[in-house]
Image (cartoon, rainbow, N blue to C red; front, side, top):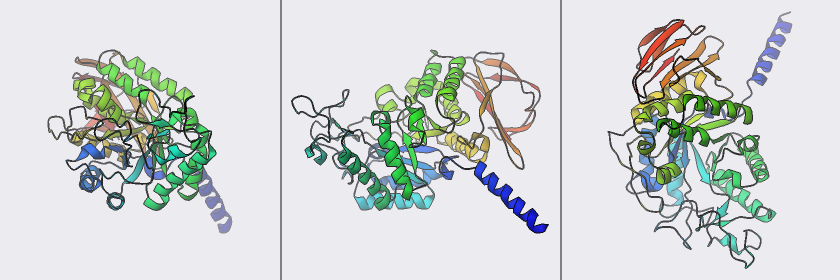
Length: 446
């Protein structure tokens, strides 16, 4: 009888394990990602100098370092004096501007020792026009006169031709070099939607045979459904980002935000992770700093990126207080300004995300439900995750306007004792009324 009971329990445990099978690396579910702009992060602009930033980033709760492209940059039609990170002349080398291979490997070893995962920005859509690859017949697109072809206003690149199998194999070989020889943990793939999805499916499947816990991010949202089917863990939340800017500028509403979530739920597979952000290298350099785009609403939308489903992302300079547009093709050091520094808030938000499973990324975290509000300016939601021993719950009440607001919420089913973001205990009853400052918010957790 005992043997039978033991076997039954074992079967139940195995069934439970099957139900909990993870779609993504286990370490990614409560992670926050940080985009490292090596050139602008320190006065030296090197990996050796950036290495000194790692302990502070870890203290702030960062888990994944996304390194912008660090390979040598082409010289033909180079933009500016230093050129674009995304005009690569040699995939398997380090840009001398940032140091040596040994410097990068030392940076990587320290990052791993501190508990970070490191992913590399991968540019598979194009090379620099003076790359050795351009000498291989059929590897790039050319016009009727045989000239290399560019895209958009990217005059410092040449588009690769994915009809060429030999080129595909060499691209995969280069990706393997970074994972097998250097030891990175995955890739952020530039303009991923411009590269055929079948290449990504083939390449990532091959890489995962030897690196099953690698993490992948696609710079794309339009093709997120197909890109995240098997190749990518995470996609860009571009539409949500633009809506956040729109709300901060009075152009969009709370209902627009909820409509965006409803559309994503119906068009993108539920286990795909959306990357939530208020800045990145493109937005900062070309569309303006978060101060320009969001003004006093910055703290609200920082918190919003953590409350809604997905993974939050922090860009170089946000923690230290950078408040100017960073030049893209020149040396332009980030600011260190306490007035604009966001590190303390990010530290608190990262702590909240790591300790409350309701905020974990899909499919481990909880879905987000709308709490009906009697004020159209209020975004109110709950995320609740049932656990074996207790329930994790997070309730957010956010004033999406530049004026004081009062709102009454029906919290039936969510009553109880919570802690607010200030650390104090707060008793939430069935009916709760809140007064919020302009762009103010309250987060309750238990």
